[in-house]
Length: 186
Image 1 (tube, rainbow, N blue to C red):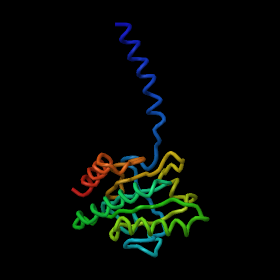
Image 2 (cartoon, helix red, strand yellow):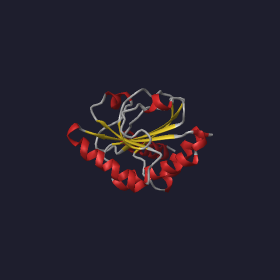
Image 3 (cartoon, rainbow, N blue to C red):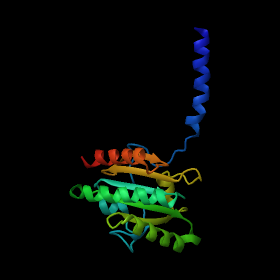
Image 4 (cartoon, helix red, strand yellow):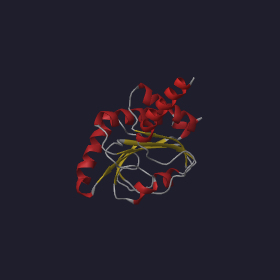
């Protein structure tokens, strides 16, 4: 009995650091989104700095904050969101891809977003950039460390219902995102 107890305790000690090392980012379930003003490069708000939560209020929304994620993953998430927005047109689902950048790379980031938007066939989702130094990054609790590639927040009535960190746009990841979207559009 003592041997099993010791083995279980040792296993617990070894597993605990793995959970402690998992990066956290974004608002938590139950927290409220606040105003911010990204620069919209494509989508319905193209050419503006309109505030997503202000513009679309209580409607179901998804924000994807990109912090160095690769093109293929972002394009796959954007494509999935484009499909979700079309499928939930009657529910007025809104989706935003917000790329974090610095002042020196704004033009390069805008071009990259335009390319991503084209490759994803994104006409219904909003694609924008925001400076990493913008106060919204802190207000939304977005972790900008190199190990956090994306932070996805799903919400309705301005209240977070799901948050994902480093979502991989594979069958499992997109399945989880689609399930979260289904919850807010039901």
